[in-house]
Amino acid sequence: MDSPTSATKRIVNYHISRLQDKSRDVRLKAIAELALLPDTDALNALRSVFENDEDVEVRRAAQEAGRAVFVKIKEQDDGSVSS
Image (cartoon, rainbow, N blue to C red; front, side, top):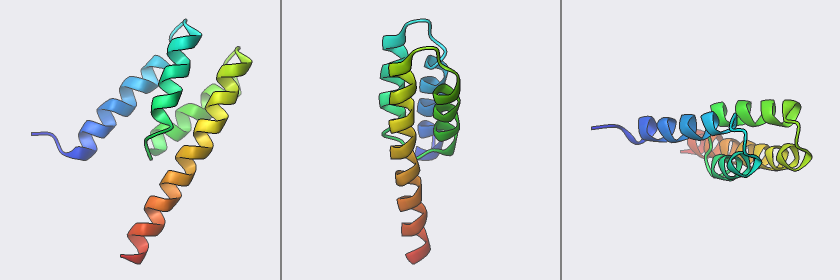
């Protein structure tokens, strides 16, 4: 049986792969899903989209999602330190 971490990694990797889709709507949906997950791979992928995507709206969404992921990671790290 998969651990929650490996299941999350599979989900993150799936959405990261969708960031390369030709459809901007697919990329926007993938960004929205990644914004919900505190994962450093998601953060790095969102940074890449922000720096390289041709679509302004996709870049803006990646930037906002990156901020959300960063905050989630920070909160998770802060919570594990104080426990």
